[in-house]
Image 1 (spheres, rainbow, N blue to C red):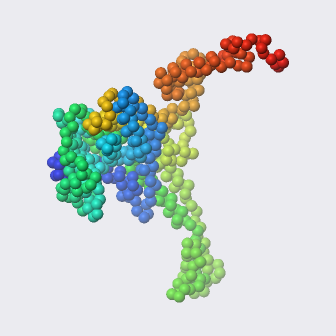
Image 2 (tube, helix red, strand yellow):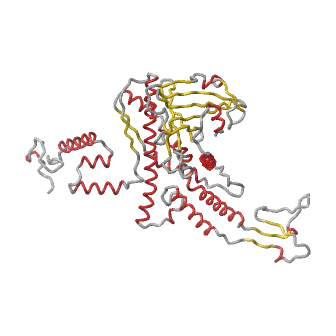
Image 3 (tube, rainbow, N blue to C red):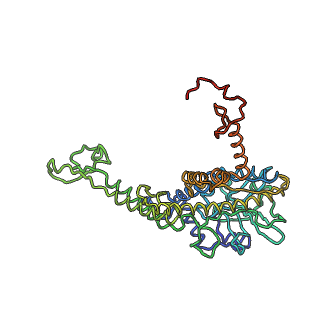
Length: 474
C-alpha cells in the first residue's frame, strides 16, 4: 500500500481508512500470500487463508450467468460484461480475502474493459449516509527500470457530475509517491486527461464489491473485512499445530546410535556414515561390548492426538468463517445427525447467498458505469437494458429431493406443469409455455403401432382395424 499520508499531502484529501483497518488489511494480505508474521522455519503454513477465500469464491460464482436484454445497447453491454466472467472467480477470491474489490470500467478502443482494483490499491475518501463510497482514490503502479511510477486516479461525485483527476509520480521505492511527473512519462498513461467532468451521472463510475460480513475491526467503517477476519488467531493456531505434526514425524524417525569405533574414517578422521539420516555416532570411549555398540531409537508417534487437536481447530475456523463442517476439517469426523447436517449446510448456504447478493449489487453498479461510458464513447445506440442474474443454488437446495417432491405435488394436482418447469428447469413463464405446447403437439402427433395416440386415445390415422396385420400376438 502507498503510505496514506503521502496521498493526503499530494491530493489534499483525508483518506477514510483508520490505522486499525490499515493494519488489518496488511495482515490479511500477508496471510493470503503465505507471509503471515508468525510463520518461520519452525512454523509452516497450511495455506488456509487462500483455501478459505478460494472455496467461497468457487461456491459464489460456479455456474453463474447474467442475461441482459431490452435493446441494442443491452446487447452491447452483454458482450462487454461477458468478457468479465473468466476472471470473476479469481477476482472475487481476492475480494473475499481482503474484504472488498473495486470494479472500474474504462473505454479501450471500441470496447469497455474492467479494471479490478484490490482492497490495498484503492483509498476511500468519503461515504454517503448509506455507507456508499462517493469519493475514492485509485492507485496504479508501474516499474520502469529502477523507478516506480504511480498514478493516482481521483473520483469525486459533485452536484455537477463526476470529477476525475489523474496525477503521476515517480519514486525509487514501492510504498512512497515521490515527485510529481507528467502522465506522458509512462506510455500507457500518455492519452489520459489530467482532469475531466462527466455530467448527467447520479452515482460513481465504479462498483464496490464488499464482503458481506460485519466489520468487527473498526465498527465505524463502512469498508468490508476479510472472509477470515474472525479466524486469524485460529489460523495461527492451526499452522502451529500442523508444524507440531511435521516435527513429530521428523523428530520421531527411526535412528541407530552407533559407537564411532564401528565406522571407518575419512581423510579428516571423521566417521564414514552409510546413511546420515539413519545412523548417529556415539563416542563412548574405551572398550565396549557388542550389545553396547548399537542403540536403536524408535519412539512411539503421537500423530493421532495431534491430528485430533488440529481437526478441532479447523472446525472452529469453519464456524468462524461461515463454512460447513467438513470443508476444511476431516469430513469423516463430522457429526451426522439430521439437525447438525442441516445447521452446518445452512451456515454455508447463508454465507454464499449473502456473497451472491453483494456481487449482484456490484454488477448492477458496474453495468450503470459501463452504460455511461458507452454513451460517452458513442459505442452503441442509447437504449434501456434489464439484467437477470442466475446463480447455482446446489449448496442451498438438494435438487434431486426437490425434483421428486415437486413431481409428487404435480401428480397430486397441487402444482401446475408450468410452475414445475419454471421451478425445476429455471425457465421463464414464456419459455415454459412454449415447451409445454411443444410437448402437447408431439404427444398429439405421436401414434402407437395400433393407431392410438400416446395417451391411449384413438389417433388420427386413417387406417382402420382391417388394415392391421391378422397374425398379431394377443
